[in-house]
Amino acid sequence: PEEWKGTIPVDAAAGEHHSLVLGANGQIFSFGRADSGQLGIPVEPVQGTSRAACSKPQPLTTMPAPASLIAAGGN
Image (cartoon, rainbow, N blue to C red; front, side, top):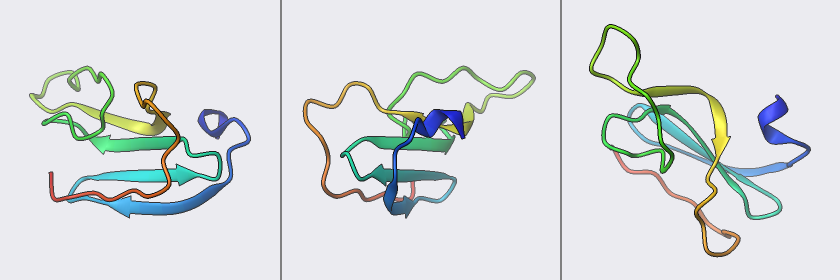
């Protein structure tokens, strides 16, 4: 997808309702439910619900350095 912008995925982690993908360049992408801020990105609530979600992988832009490992918990 366009969100990847040529990044090669090298690892993935899944929480209860969200996922993380690590790119070969150290960039992390997140998507899924975000009720508790688990995506690390600002997400608007889904219209008509109290839940927030992001269906397309979005890059984390606030990381101080490239990542080498990822992990996801339940929330």
